[in-house]
Image 1 (cartoon, rainbow, N blue to C red):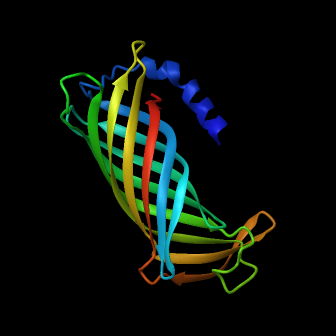
Image 2 (tube, rainbow, N blue to C red; image 1 turned 90 degrees about the horizontal axis):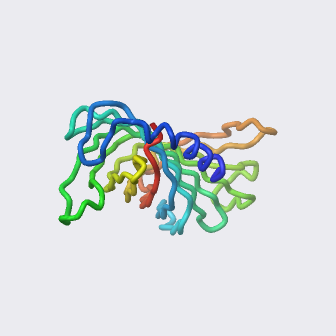
Length: 215
């Protein structure tokens, strides 16, 4: 996965440099941002709260800059974490807005911006042979689904060669509303049962991402 992301970023580097977009003066147009980083997450359910530690984070945003003050975007963010014996794969599909923020210093260290987003997020828990959370020993994974809301603070930069890049810290709250027990029939996932979650299950995630404007 890391190799594919690196190849994706490098393949668009020359294209990104050719765009007429400047971090300090947003101009109308559509651009793709892609990056990778780390995230940490807290997963809570009726049995307690679990620390997901540090994991990999991948994100992309298709952003349409309306004017120098506002942009709208659709995006996705994938976070991987490990809780006890389980692997958590949380995928956020979101829509949101972006706006520039005033700089806290007199130096041009980048153009700060803020983002707010809402969306939907499926999360998959891979049991890895540990069936203590399920009553059916044939279950291989559990999938949850529910709304997500969050925000981010970031900074846009430009290199001396014209490459636009960014750093960003983001926070998301993911409420788990529906759950499905899934068994694998070869390579085909089969839903064994579905249920509504009691409303006390959620994921809090914090991420740090570095990436480029791919085009």
